[in-house]
Image (cartoon, rainbow, N blue to C red; front, side):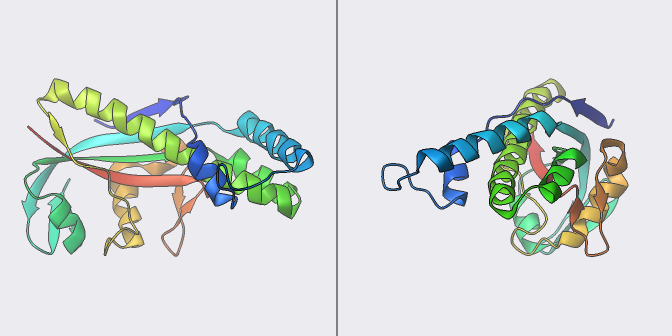
Length: 199
């Protein structure tokens, strides 16, 4: 069964956010003017972020050194196959913070867009982590007590083309995500991932 979750709570990793902006805690000085600009940009971001996710549980039908078949779909990837060793199921998930965020980025001056981009990257990561934890809590009710860290297209040798598998099995359009001709995702701040699970 495919589930859609709206209004997913999220936490932004502050260290990672500041790191994306090139600041290091205790080592970088931020002028009051710059701090004000950052804070105002973050407030704009929070007003347009609409976290939503979708996920489903699928059985692993075949697992070999260079590929796995899950939900009837073959995924060629040595790194993912290795990641799944010892696991019988997989949760496919996708999250996004929405199109309004992309539209806001297009309207802002470059300096603010850079701030917004960094905040959006960490916000969507926070949404993914939040949904990941919820999935693991749910999995217990299906007799799944072991989980591996989530794995996304673009990691290791897992091709971005795998986003087509996520689209086919989950129906990404139901949460406003689409796969481009080059297999990236729109809205820009969107993530797909697969979580190995077992009893």
